[in-house]
Image 1 (cartoon, helix red, strand yellow):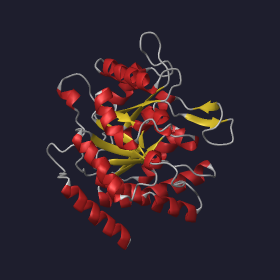
Image 2 (tube, helix red, strand yellow; image 1 turned 135 degrees about the horizontal axis):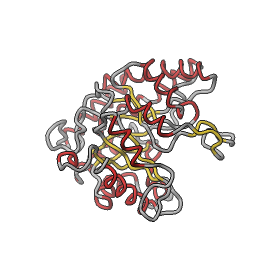
Image 3 (cartoon, one colour; image 1 turned 90 degrees about the vertical axis):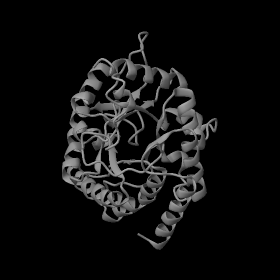
Length: 333
């Protein structure tokens, strides 16, 4: 760890103390140790809903659900905790680094975000990290640089009281070469994360990573208690007809139910992706009864994050419909 990073973390610690942040008890944003149980989100994830006998999980809100108002500057990243609690009754949030990309080392900004979290009784769960390089690149220099690029997000997550960062395991090369590289890159980042008490998890997010068997094999290869997966119900497109990984129409898709089942043994979070709903409030593209049963049968009792990404409904309507669906199906599976 560099001198500057040590100084930054020491300063962050002082700021956290100034805001009265604690790691246990009633603190909304306290720090946690990484999970050693690969079937659950984290060691303190038993949700209040379970105690009420309704759900086996707790609902969190993924910030990507509000990416449109965020990109359009109708919503500020600093207001996200308040909006989650006030507008949707959700007290656990998942950030996307794209919406505060240049703030990972900004002490004043992180302190303000944490203060707003605490003021509104909101717990920070994870930061989804994109655009920091290819952790699965067979090129040693590129891969090692990508690992180091993520350090700042581990540090920021630790300060904000998150348990986890979500990363990608993309790379250019053969299936075998990228898999080998991803095992190395994730293993190195996992070592850094473990020192900070932060989990490092990978989402099925296009390309090889959307192949459940491939990503499960990566997890077996890494074999670290704080490195796991974030199964996303809708991100199982392996190949598109566009030039980029996320461009164009999907032309090859992995079975989402099979893939989720393969990834659940390593899951430390789950993303409830939804695009559209029928008249009965059911998700059109994913059978939530079948999917939540897979999640429950895996012994998962952690956070399931709402990630609405449709175009027919407003983000606000989509979030509310996804929440209602999770609550209805989660109570009966």
